[in-house]
Length: 97
Image 1 (cartoon, rainbow, N blue to C red):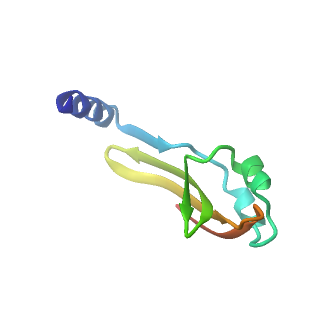
Image 2: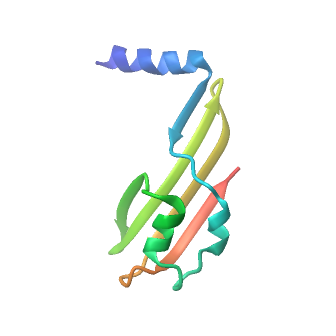
């Protein structure tokens, strides 16, 4: 099993390009407001998150994208959103290149 996985990774490296996650537009990030923006709006802006979880009892959604070329990180975007119990954005963080 390990050899098969290593072979797949090696083939990706030979191709020169690896995409991880799902790319998403960053323009709507500017319109996110804590205690105002609703969960359904976040879904409308960015679609299905790549990961959902809980942080101190609050639902979290993570959007993540990385692009590697010839083994080097060329582009990345990470959006992490925490929702209040009423489905409004509690906090969020965005980083990207």
